[in-house]
Image (cartoon, rainbow, N blue to C red; front, side):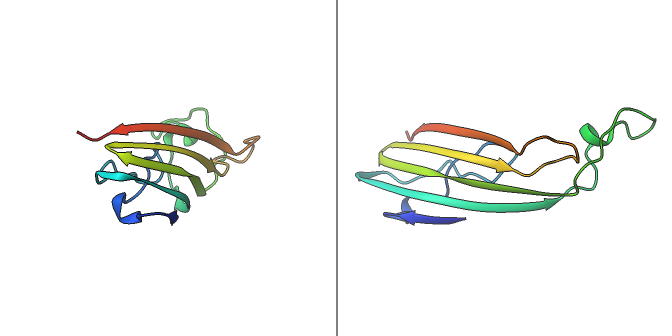
Length: 114
């Protein structure tokens, strides 16, 4: 993940939506405004996915899956005092052969540190 902004040591990574990049809930308190933009990519190999491959022990419905899956996440984070606000978007490559479009979902997160 690449992050560009001010005072990056205050926050280790943006929050995330599962299953995706690992997010971090901790951030440091400060009396100044800080921000950063981020972009990251992740890939994985899928050998077995029961939701796409069907039942393991008997014949059932299934689809021809993609074995290599990639994710890209990008967004923006603003921090002030005990509050962190983030907006991010996730793009995922096709998970099975006849999937019409890429999977895309977003996240808006408001965190308060106490």
